[in-house]
Length: 305
Image 1 (tube, one colour):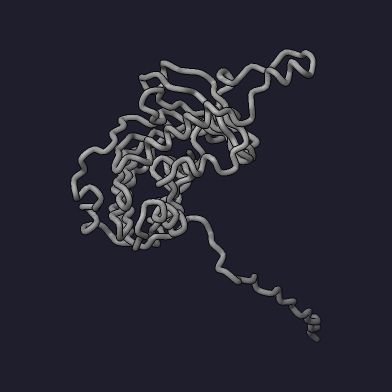
Image 2 (cartoon, rainbow, N blue to C red; image 1 turned 90 degrees about the horizontal axis):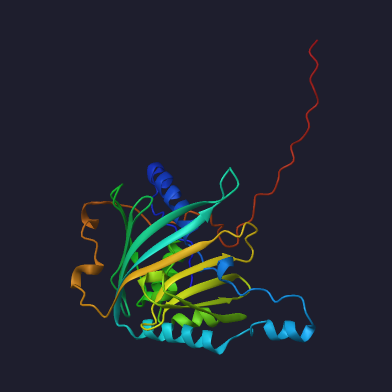
């Protein structure tokens, strides 16, 4: 599961560009990145210096079957739901001028219906934003500025998530929770997975704690022991020299709830100013070559009589 970068910039006017660059910057850091990371207090204690045989005995297995069993159970529970809704609170760290990082938080209300319906209402902190997908089109709406972008979308949620990122760099931290096969992304490149123990604090229920990692990220997850629903995930990226933490809290789970037909359409789109989807990051056109440097000819000075 992933806490990833999310960007929402779809305006072309100077004001829209400025606002969306700010929003993109805020959400990009939140998005956008793999959910969860292990806190030092909860990681296995290192073995005390001893013989090589005792060290080998104390080391956890690279891939522990119990951890894989829990991950698969959670993924299967999510994949089996025809519809679902939940609240996602993302906390991410950002460097400060004082040294220690500052924490920023966003909150989203998510509703989805397989295979082709999704609504994400991001309430705060930061500028609010709405995303709708109805099976044919995807719509991004900025309530504060009353701006809306509408574009064609593929036939599935999975494909639309990819299209939203390619078109406007929109990426949701909880994407792996709503895709068709949640376990697929976890298993790809997995090098370590081990069981830690149980918690009776996170999510207001008993959760199984486990950790897993690949070459890109280290993740710690809290998954409901009974209902197999993820409650919290924390991540630290291996290439991040500052080891900043990204955290995703999931709550208010509802699986297969009744959903109104108009849930996935933006009622305010008609009265908003329409603009185009656009990525906030500079994209160099394919085959583009920088202009050749032209050498200026040196002119001799003209002496005046």
